[in-house]
Figure 1 (cartoon, rainbow, N blue to C red):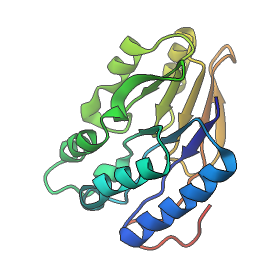
Figure 2: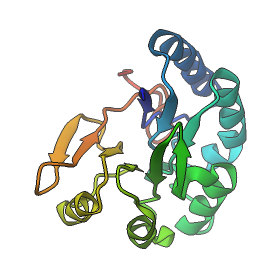
Figure 3: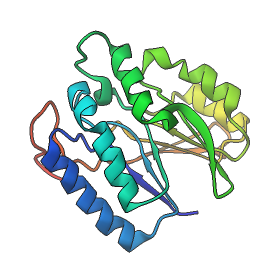
Figure 4: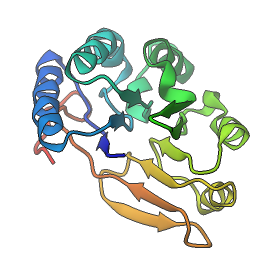
Length: 196
């Protein structure tokens, strides 16, 4: 199975949303993935998420049929009330942000690891199956990575750090890959100074 990964886009306006969609069209045509996982920080802040989440999701599904979208800290940042509001709004649009799904025989489990209201560790440890691919926005602690390795996880992917990094479980059977960001959008409502 070929997994396309995109993370930390930080969409902050409609222009950056459509630039992302154009990039995805080219990337998908070149790589022909079986699924695409978006590892969070799709949006720069909660107001952008509220305004563009449905549009982004609809445009993504016009381009490609199989997606998993995860929640990142920026997707709920600067909320009107409290952080929980961002998490709950995100789940309404992207319910797979914390779920276990099977696609083409491969199990995926995604968690809202940077959201205190998600109870992600309990969800993860209660629902993981051997050979699952674990998806998160932030990297897991060594302790949690070791527990996932004991439960037979096949692979862990995360975003958040904006740089590539590999961390292994204690028995070196499980690898967690921190994926570099693809930022067309900006940080804190400013345009990106570069795209990766």
